[in-house]
Length: 210
Image 1: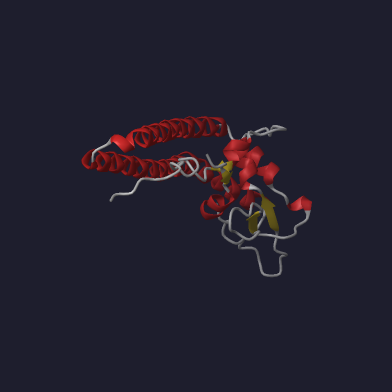
Image 2 (image 1 turned 90 degrees about the vertical axis):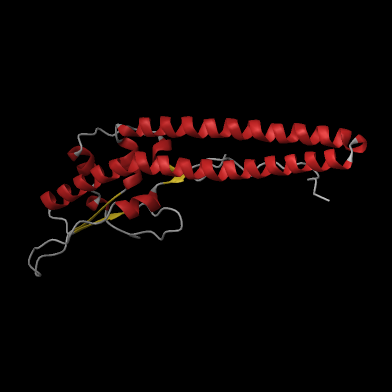
């Protein structure tokens, strides 16, 4: 099963910079930055998200492995007895093998979509809560813009350089009533890339209809 990837891309879609400050034009613009993945990993919901995703992912893996073993066993039996089969039985067994292989591929795709949907279902409410607290921190501390430094997959970094003193992550966590831990659970800061595991193993020689 493919390793899960970071939520940076999703966070950038869900968490946007608050509206610009209404301070006079002569006032220097105050810019801050944070890391949504890190904040997400520190939330109380992170362990629940990790646990639920892990359970669903393991169930999909178990079923996929069962189906792959069924295919391999049936293909082995086909190879062993094909020489003694009549044409009608041989064609029936080949159709059965091809159908099972198609089912395995479809299951992997469906399981992957299901896990992605579950991830969004669990994470989106937390990102909305984070956004609300970002807005409040920005308003209370006079920030016109707050950037997310998590670049995510296929996304360019939002900000290439900013002074450390403009990191508002601690303020956001404090606003949310969260005391950061030294080693946050990494799974909650990751996005599942695949729920169906690797491509299903194919028999050494896939029978074809004649």
